[in-house]
Image 1 (cartoon, each protein chain N blue to C red):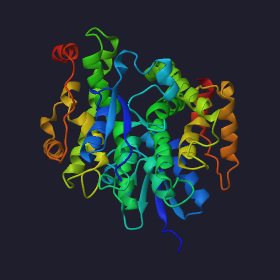
Image 2 (cartoon, rainbow over the protein chains, first blue to last red; image 1 turned 135 degrees about the vertical axis):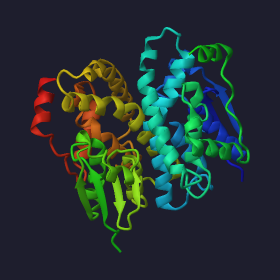
Image 3 (spheres, each protein chain N blue to C red; image 1 turned 120 degrees about the vertical axis):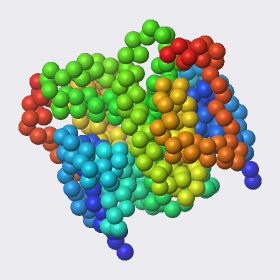
Image 4 (spheres, rainbow over the protein chains, first blue to last red; image 1 turned 60 degrees about the vertical axis):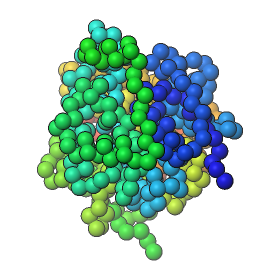
Amino acid sequence: MSPDPVTVHGMSTSGNCHKVRLLLEQQGRPYTWIEVDSAHGGTRTPEYLAKNPNGKVPMLERADGAILVESNAILCWLAEGSTYLPADAWQRAQALSWLFFEQYSHEPYIAVARFIRGWTPLDSRRRADLPRLHERGMQALAVMEKYLAQAAWFTGPAYGVADIALFAYTHCAGEGGFDLAAFPHITDWLARVRAQPGFVPMPGVSDDVAVRLASS
Amino acid sequence: MSPDPVTVHGMSTSGNCHKVRLLLEQQGRPYTWIEVDSAHGGTRTPEYLAKNPNGKVPMLERADGAILVESNAILCWLAEGSTYLPADAWQRAQALSWLFFEQYSHEPYIAVARFIRGWTPLDSRRRADLPRLHERGMQALAVMEKYLAQAAWFTGPAYGVADIALFAYTHCAGEGGFDLAAFPHITDWLARVRAQPGFVPMPGVSDDVAVRLASS
């Protein structure tokens, strides 16, 4: 029995949203993608907020209308019973630990730096935050680099949810102004992720975003 | 067979650390608590960083020396196979969703506002962040209030990990400068949590912190 199809509400150039697309593609699971421009109010409409009062993407919707939000919770649900989520309780907890690390110590610096550089005006006051974001983001990358010196995957014995979650904004950290040249283990791990069966790259940013990134 | 004893490295007045103590107490599980003063460098020693390169509390250590970090991952591991973590995959994903909400949309505002008010000097430049933290923290509380209008527990059918995680900094949001009077459903839920078997309150802050909170 193939799994029920799901609908994903997401912004394609958001790493948090690409996590969900990447796993769905790798699982070969049928899904419908509804593009939501969260950078321009798409998650603030009454219709969207009725489904997700926290007003964020991605959001997964089942055929029966049930809703699941938070990218890493969606990954865990999709991965249930597969090799993408460890069956062993201790190892699964370690994968969860990396998922929480990603959302607390990584994404708020690396993804937010990328957002500010690409999606806010060149004279935005938020750009004053970039030095602090870079400092903290570099600390997160250093934690990852240290771990990867002695392990191939964040999820555990095999590639899975924690690798997908951390790939999401690490692979485009350059757009946030981070230089990965000092992190050879991370660079190798990114290549291993890209070599996984069913891998799909994140769509490129729009022209206006690319111009701002090049000017930042 | 009773579970193996564990060691928790934590700061007692940290909500993230209290999550772990609360669940261990409610489970009646044997544990050793090692107090770590993370506000004064206790997580930045070479010995601590060797065990947790991300330099945060809480940290769980098994008898065999294996380490697990990230408060909400620790909760999930401790709760495995108990009513504190739903057995149903969809419901478990919903509980995880609230755990990620807590770490991304709640703790960085409510816990950080409390930290700045209580643990930084009265003339700290970080206090300039408080208006923004209050605005975002109020948004998180509003999301919780809306949910609690139609459900008793964040974890699912019963009290569990998501309630413990969200209780941690919601119950002391007043110390962060948040007034919960506008959130009657949250107030009722806090009382339900406190009435759970085995509930233990978070230890009070030290005198110097209390003085700063009273002056903030």
